[in-house]
Image (cartoon, rainbow, N blue to C red; front, side, top):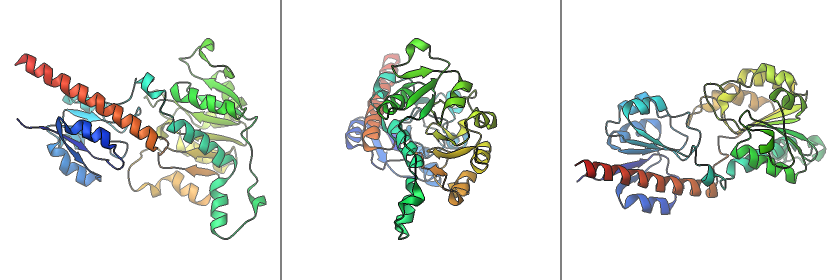
Length: 326
């Protein structure tokens, strides 16, 4: 009987424990593939495991006649054509809805705070100055997080964790989320209407899921409502923001700065021509990191081990169903 073939297409740092679990019942291929290589190897895969590098689209699925499962250790799966999976009857296994497990996955929340501090204290520009032989701290006078009003847009798991971290800095925290009522916020957090939050916040941090209803929801009107000199942090998804309006707000001085871990239409190579990357080359008030907020040894180890167990449970259940039918 042929063993199932699990293709792990982005395997750098893949946990040995998860690999050992999967290989008991399947042939596991650990690889680090570009798109062309993936298109070749996916032809023999029963399970495709991806992180965030690859788009799983109709073109790729057409090359994968045996594919039954796509596994992705993330909550955001906008890089996967879920409609195409459903039409093919391919199961998607990810971390959406795994609320209890995700409570202790903190990488993205910590990176959010790190971006705030890097922007407020002008860390990248100061470091570049040192590398060039300079040592003039007066060129990089920054600002403190203490006492700032920070607006959290999306008060779910990550928004709540970020709010707790901000409490340690004694920042004033406002939160906006249509699914949350006043009695559901933690001590020290004030629930506010979206427009009120924008008008009163010196820092706005996005923690919203990407859906058809939220795509591009943060645009020119929202930037106009923010106080002049405020900053935007986005560690959620690039498509939430009208990036042209963001660039205008930065260039025109409406925003003092922005720090992004995500951009629209992300891909594993060729992002140097993205308009915001080009802007950041010439202007120090924009910091961009390559969607690495959740990329910590701790977070990735936890999530990939959890997903490996979830995948094995699914495969064993599917096998049991087939056995019962036969």
